[in-house]
Length: 454
Image (cartoon, rainbow, N blue to C red):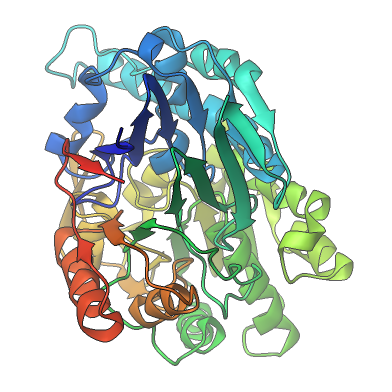
């Protein structure tokens, strides 16, 4: 009897990661992510899975980012009743991320209905904050390196993947097979997070490929960000920085703190972190000291390096302030949240700046800004983009192509099969070619919805 994997997301695209493993009448879902970006991808969130939630016997998460965890409230609401297994850091972050995701979806639906901007009447949220709070009761935590059985005879071990707090690679041992899910792999030289552990030996590997087609620049984040903030301060502008509330918000805050300490940018430059989720996440760094590079003093500096903006009233109050200043706000691809209001307000002024800090999935506003589009649509209105757009290519939290190949090579023995996932088609296929040519391993890019032998 074969162990099979069905690719329900994260194949041919960087979002919606869901991998259904089936063996001997039982099934386990590794990751349960939302699709983001292009509308045709987002529509998949509204389509039922090819298996009902009742047919899934266990869920295991690699990490908390919404493209890996954001479908969980819907899965649980529609009938999934078993445990959701993850690391302590992932549970802590999902406690912040998932209710916020539900709240944002309720807010966006209410805004569309209020202004009659939706083709649906009424516009509905995919799920609510209450749905998210309910699914959190199903979380069970497991330490790195401690094997556990989500199902009888199915053995799972988490190993550190860097990337963000709690991020793990998942080794599944079932039916005589060892299957390794890389999860999202961090960079060995990340400013904030520890490097990923070397991979354990496996028969089948699923490797992410977000940056599988490129090499990170030699320039450091400080070398990229410093001159941009110097220009901003000199002209008295306002920088709007769409950030991922988990990870990139903290690394950019840390970088600004270092630049101020080094005298590269004025110590008087005002910095605001306008994302309750990012504010809460920043506080978690002191609870997971073993996972990142910061000292206790640096964690404290992170928490005091910006004015923390919590309430909607405080957020709206930022509109009355003058530059120079920096506003960090979620979401990181400008797909929703408070950052949209700041972009609508400040994108039209040439003195201002929009700083993009990580991967921008095709179809998102962030991607359109990165491509140099002169107008973006926000809440049904076209907004002119006259602000300087700065793309920080060194701010990524993902390993690049060379680092992914190095991680695989450190496995030692060749697996039977590598499946290249969680990347745009070009990035995935280039990494597949490199694995075949440089490592001489069997590699393939699975199609969405396909079922393959593990």
